[in-house]
Length: 233
Image 1 (spheres, rainbow, N blue to C red):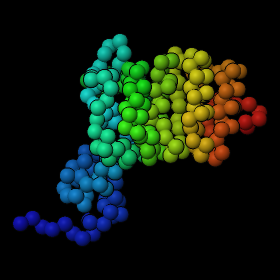
Image 2 (image 1 turned 90 degrees about the vertical axis):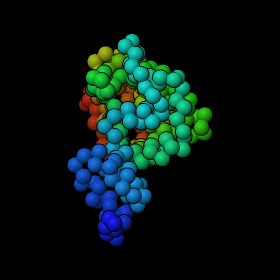
Image 3 (image 1 turned 120 degrees about the horizontal axis):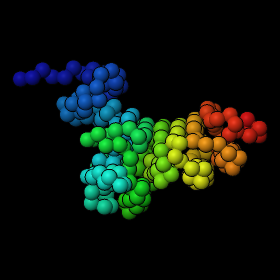
Image 4 (image 1 turned 60 degrees about the vertical axis):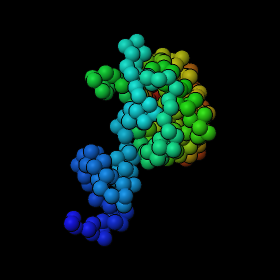
């Protein structure tokens, strides 16, 4: 008969400290299968800091790679069980995306331009508010115009830190579109904002200042000095 689990390892605060020290994410995933007491705490460790958006996309449905578009949902609109999805996505506290990094099979992480619209439609059809209801931090790096607004499904009122990096092929027009959109959807309580545009011009500088003026609690700002007006500084 196997030994009983020590009482101390049934206390969630202790389990959290133990699982946090595990060297690999896979170790925490394995711990989640030991018993029900461990499952919730271990899954929090597995999902709280995601190095990519792809674990989230794979929860929504099977993915396929199309050379001309990038990754897309194999069956069109996602059809995942919403309750099961939120059981995982509610644990996410940070996520990053870089469409130039590699994913499964050596393909770039580039996602199809209509994936974001499909996710938003899926969330709305299930009367959800956002994909990541507890997210606190997002790092987002894209290389082309069509990718700049793919961040929208991942934003949430709980967000406190946002890092944006736009590649050299992102135009001023797309940058302006992103800033105008962010000024209307980002929470006013945002505390950290790091913005690295691919180019600088007076129009972008003005729009950036307007975006920054939306935030009431901003404490950390990182952006090209030339992109900040005297009033903003």
